[in-house]
Length: 164
Image (cartoon, rainbow, N blue to C red):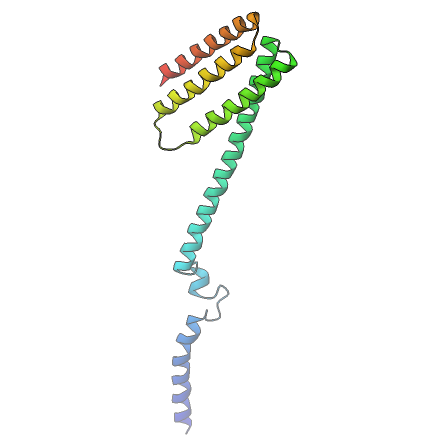
């Protein structure tokens, strides 16, 4: 009877070990699932975390870009106001034109699929329209000053193109 009890006890221990191993076997992390990241599910969680991190970085980059565009817009408005000595009506109208133009420029830059040359061509067209719209709002002296500003900008753009 004692031998039969020992055999059944050993048989019970051998059959119960695989059952416990499947469910963590008493290990703190739950066996293989906890220690290895949960198998395929752990890999899926890892890739989901990577995608979330990438989305967070993209969101942060867009926020930084928006801040940069905002500061550039403000600087442009201040420069035009100062150098052209704009009155309030001119300042308001030019600010509206600048805001509209910058939105178009950002849309061109964000658009995917266009080549760099196509984007440059589109940006030059937007700037040209902006310049002609601003010129209609200026008096004779302001037009001379603004024309000099346009020529200076054209020189800087040409230098940038030659660096490429």
